[in-house]
Image 1 (spheres, rainbow, N blue to C red):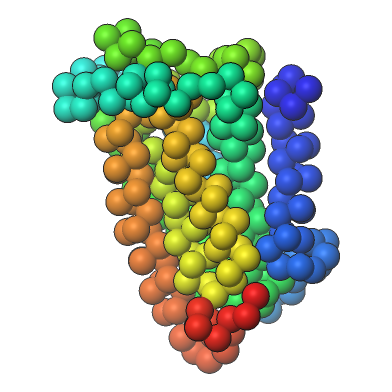
Image 2 (image 1 turned 30 degrees about the vertical axis):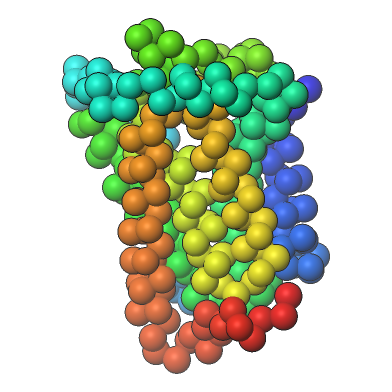
Length: 279
């Protein structure tokens, strides 16, 4: 039922986002819509930032078409396999358990975008404008850096490279994955892993936000997603390392850019001290 089509994925994602915002901020998630409206009206900077965020997401959506039009024929999969060998196969064989697969698929399909969207809502409800702006900058930086790699350094998913000896366990739970989800993500868009970069980035920003509940939730999600990219046979270890480095870079830059953007007295609600947070 959950994975019948992308329409169901979108519907359940909306529900999950609302639940995550309520758990993370302990406030009515519908209030986030009011808060984002207020922020857009009071700050042209935020309006431009949101426009930039949607712009880079649109570019990512059409990356596959751009790649086809450029007629690029590079393939670095064998190079990556030469670096790390059968790491993913060994890990998959070690941990594969039928009952675990649905949990991993749920986090891979739903939690990445749900936690990301919920982060914006949590920071709006917390009135933490530095982290709100930093999350938007983080999204822009992650995608802006990843897309050129997808175009010029294409690496195929592990399961599709026969010498790797890895099985695509996603199909055990989501048999229509290739028909429903694949058009959104190219088979060779592996390095760096955006599932790693985005999930780790949201956890790093949550850690800096001072919201301990949200920090715990994003950390658990990130750990399961990073483990899941190997368990499902999708990403190489090299992809994960690249995604982690991208997360560190993007969050560091994003927080600094957010503080610069809000430097004119608009940042009264700054990053709270973890030592003084009681949540």
